Length: 289
Image 1 (tube, rainbow, N blue to C red):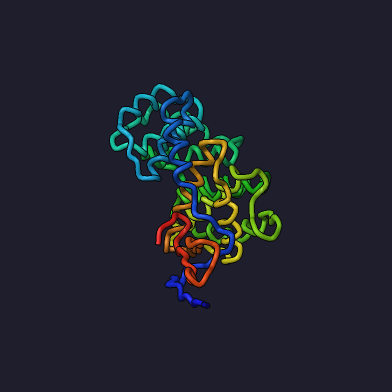
Image 2: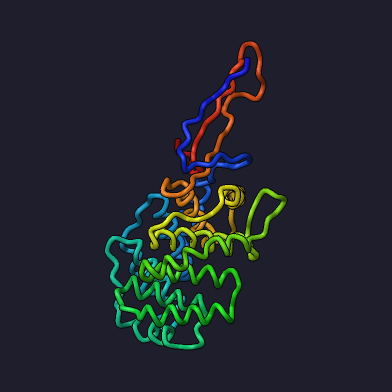
């Protein structure tokens, strides 16, 4: 018996072969294990934020851990602390404790793109006003001295913290960055640096596009190749990668942009006169119908 199935797929959806449903249980277990024992502010940030992305709200008592672990003289540490505090219901950090360090990074001509992002993002969370025109000029200068894909990713993330007009100018560069990805075996796209770099950059596409108020401009075939790469990661080594993967899977399931569709066979592999039908599930990458 031949059965034709008409799939109720949205106009934004793209059907993919060899695409797996995300291993959310594995990611959740990784965060739950990490929250039992952590020794640095970055691990705490990625654990709190990652597990919240999966729908678990942790108690405000972790605010004490944030204040104990943060290094007030290190901009990356401040970034992790502010992001971690944002995941809790009531965790207010003392703004003045961080202002001097953030100001120094924003004004320094030696600050790298990542450091600039850490300072801008932290300032936004803390409610500290930044000079957007100076930030934009600094990003333009940095682009001339460091054109690595990771630096470009941080530039997009920084643009997402600024005005919608500035964000749109960065969103318009997404396709250029997509073209710099490495294609493997004709089926996946990734960036040099592996899952850590690829996840950060891909997430930046969505953050800057959302701030700009525009869809992520990426060809459907390229989207599928990125999605195939991410869905193949059943386990990742770092909490940072686990956190970004969690965010990416949610982005890839948001109908505001193209949504990869996972078609999985759930009936027995053998077809017989007694079992002539083929049963499939049609879901997004989160396993949702």
